[in-house]
Image (tube, rainbow, N blue to C red; front, top):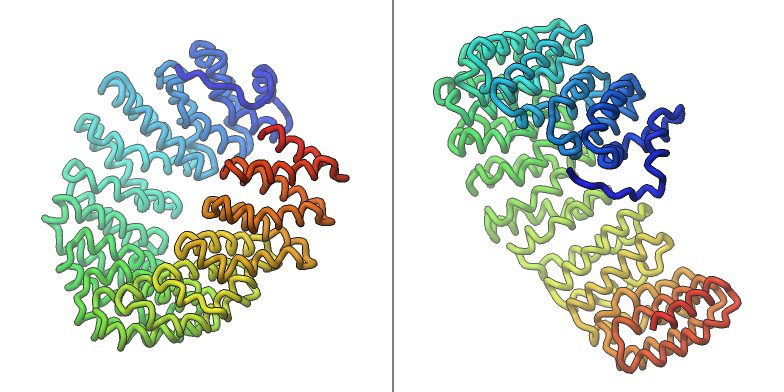
Length: 579
């Protein structure tokens, strides 16, 4: 049995007592550490005392039950000495609670318990009992667990019990409560995998029942069952039936069903094969790109990167790209954003000439998009087109867009834009980093938002790794060191944070010549936070670089040992002691 260390800082007796607390926060804390309690009291007391007590918690608030099922799902089987039968009643009870997350977790734990029972007869006896009780429960949500459990044991029980389980699922799939039918539809993919134990007629009748259901959230999950069936011998026998089912879903009146179908198109293509996909489903994808619902156009555009692998270059040129040109200026920004995330993936397939003529104009249109999120998405996929057209041809188009994004009101956009610099520096070299581009980086280093400044500092370190310290010292670092005289102390802090970030790239001579005078001057700064970070920077450099920089850095720290600020004084003395 695993021994669990008590890292709570509380006596174990207090943790046990909190299981009975009126304060829900204390109960949650205690339930989170049930494994610690069980480990401390041992398997016997866990079975005889803790498990019965846990049964009393099953009427607690959902927050407690969520933590309870999480705790029991960790390694509790080991904590009861491997005697899984002890846990079955608790997990069965949790399959009847209102919270779906708890029910599903409990059902999956029951599946795990079944696999650890000592013999086949025991599996059949206990699992059939649990499934029947859950199915007969007055609480209809318990049927959620039934449809999860049945596929896991249907091939481990007798023929009579298999027939009984199939009848249970058949009744659930025809239940008058839509939520119950939804459970059956969601998990029917697990049943079809057991063909021919689950017979041909049952699969067809159930799928026909689902597809005629008036609720679209029931019809949509048939897609998963059909994908699963196309990987079994059922597909060989009923190929026409499966393909026609797919087509009915693709033409469903509900856009939610069509959306789900489109989202799964790549999986459908993989399951039925490239030729069958091109013959039966390719035109649906092209049709979805012209759908009246913007959500449909968005998901269809998003799937281009995966689905273009099923198309040849000629089809892309003649059928797909004309449709993409029609949505590059769609009135919905999320449609354009989806296009930006996938359109560049076509370049490697159609080649340089066609990319230059067909993809580049779309790229340039999206690069000027009024929505900054669209432009950021496009930047993240740049490598797909630059690998075909080369970077030089695009760099001049990118700089104006970069400049605009650098001034975006949304700080997350500004932070994301910075990451483009290292991509171009690596691909083109220092030629890309003109004075105009470097000014953008310096603006980011002085940004009012901490996250933007930190991202800019990290990119500075990356540029040094790519282009070398000599280039950086000549073109960039001298300007950053100038921040130490700026009135805003946050920008002065940027100097110290940059030194810390690039320390591994600096040699001792550079530190003595350039960095040491900076630290000496900034150790006299009027802001205590600056002086505190001088301590941190000095100790980092001394420990990381060693050698002839240690003694001069010690002198900087010694000068701060008499600082008027108690925290700075403490840091300086602690740093010296560590050296």
